Amino acid sequence: MSSQVILISLLGPYALPLVVGLAALALAKAYAEYKASAEIQKQLDKSRLERWTALENEQRRKTEEIERSQAAVRQAEKKLARTVLAQPVRARTGEEPAVQGYLDVGRRAPGPDEGSRELIAELSGLLAGLPKEIKAQPAWPFQRLEEETKRLARAADRGQPLKRAELTALKDTLARTMTRFLTESEDRTKAEREFFQRGEKALDEVLLHLPLAVPDSRRSELASLRDDLVALLEKKTLDWGGLELLEKRLAGLKELIEPDLQRRAYRRILGESVIRNLEALGYRAGEPFAEAKLDQPARAILTGPAGGRLSAAIQPDGRLVFDLAPDKAGPLTRAEKKDFRAQEEKWCGDFHELLRLLTREGFSFQLELEQPLADEALPLADLITAEELAAEEETRFDEKPKARRRED
Image 1 (cartoon, rainbow, N blue to C red):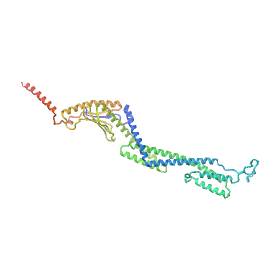
Image 2: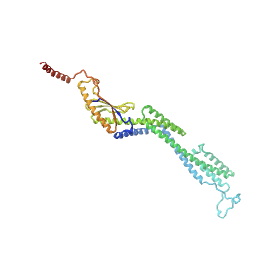
Image 3: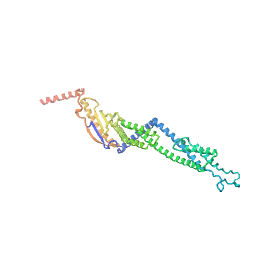
Image 4: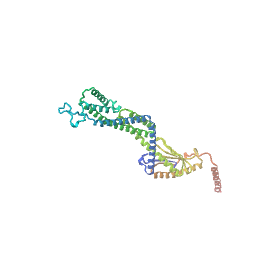
């Protein structure tokens, strides 16, 4: 007979890869359900995070702006590549324009400054068509090149001769500036996109683990990390070192949270299995296992098929503990004590059957303790029931004739 039973898990408590069979499937399902629930909560929390929403909108605006600027510069670069400084027709001496030939009748040879004027007009149009955001950036000389082009145009309007070398240098400078702008802006855009994506990935991990974190102190650490990540992404500079430090903090917290989540999933499926199998054996669950903090036991209360109050507990260290007690609190009558001993004997057989069923599902336990409730823990009541009194009277009546026969 046994009233108290203690089982120790052989699997080194809550190791997810070590359970087998149906228990392994149930464990994986419970773990996935916790993660799915946390994913839904993450999306909700992220949508409510006003600083993140503002940051995301700003990042989208900047991306669209730089893409427009890059497209405008690429188009201007193509036009500039087709722009040439026309060569005036020169005499063989190189001093005067040559006399037009027969085939040149109807054509007008460009004058000494006409090609320069056309080039200046082309450059002015290209620079005027560039977005204002680019020209306003002090890091790029587009504004100065535009002012220089206007200066040369005014000089040409006044009839001042323009040096071809100066115009060629201006065109080449603009071409190099455009090429460098595209290269650097594309590299910058790529780096910003990578930085933002890494930061968002870390933020998603933080928000995902927030509802999974226990105890509260760990949840507070994650909330602090969330705020630090958003503040880092709001900065105008790409602080790669700062991002790496925050990622390391996150990795350390995840190493603590993931095993706890596995323990929660294990306790949940073990509790469900215990209740399901005990109910199959005729027990009724008055209070099924409820999820408790990992440093506290999860408890359930059941009623036996023949009576008796069965308490079950999954301890923080993984032990599974059962205690069978009488339905009645306080001293028992002899009949009640006899009934309890019968319940105890029934529980002894049911417990071994439960152990067999748990093992079949994939759990593995070692019996640490099995003992009946001591007699001194079951005090008898002073009150004698009518049935007990009648039994005593019948016993005394039967004993008197036997005593007289011995005297004779």
